[in-house]
Structures are given as C-alpha cells and as structure tokens.
Image (cartoon, rainbow, N blue to C red):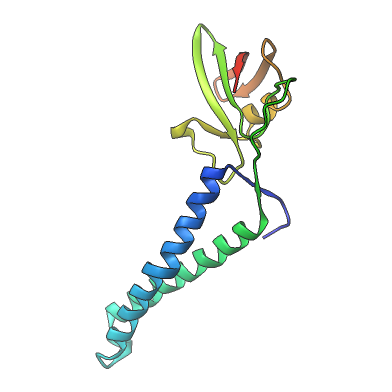
Length: 155
C-alpha cells in the first residue's frame, strides 16, 4: 500500500476495527477449524471442502493484512467548530441544484458510499466542495453535463 493517508471519521474507524476484530476472533478460527476437519477426511486432492476452506482462509488473511495496513495509516477526521466554517473532511453539506436539495457528507475515500450520501474528498464533487463556504457556488462535470450547486449549509 502506498503512503497515502487514509482519512476516516470516528464511525468509519470503529467499523474497520469491528470488522478486524470479528475476522481475528470469529471468522478466521472458524475457517481454520473447517480446514482441519477437511484435512482429517483423507485425500486432499479430491476434497472440495478442503479447497473451499483454504480459499476462504486465504481471502480472510488477505483482508486482515489490508485492514492492519489501513488501521496503521488511518488519520482520524477531527470535528471542529471553526468560525470560518468552510467545507472540510467530515463536513455535512446541504446543496441546492435545479430547485432540488441534496445533503452529502464529505469523507475519506475508504468510507465513501453513495447510497448513504457519503462522498469522497477525492471525487469531483468532493474536490469542488473542499474549502468552500455557505453561499458559494460550485460547478461539477458529471456524465449528464455540468451541474451547478449552491452551498446553503455546512455542519
């Protein structure tokens, strides 16, 4: 993994720690037991359960390694109540476009989830919003063309 900082909210960091703990304490021991049971059944070359359990163990170990790197590189997004109140990582921003109101939270790329209205600070909209204040307009190139947003609230 490169040395790029991994920005996470407190909730995002807790989710990754929870997933890591579950993999270490529940899922990995479970799969190890399945590998051991399958191994005890004899001929491994024709044992589909053994192959499946080994594959799953390999996947879990890969995810554990990935999470360890993420947690080591994670930078917590601090909530700050500043007087200049511009958009930054962790901000929840209310935007108006074409008489439609949309609310997004700007997060690090590992937490981005469009279904939860969480956008990455690396995305076109996220990049356009960072540093802006209430009343400012941002223009973003989208597949459907250019979109113009007015920032009406920042929390």
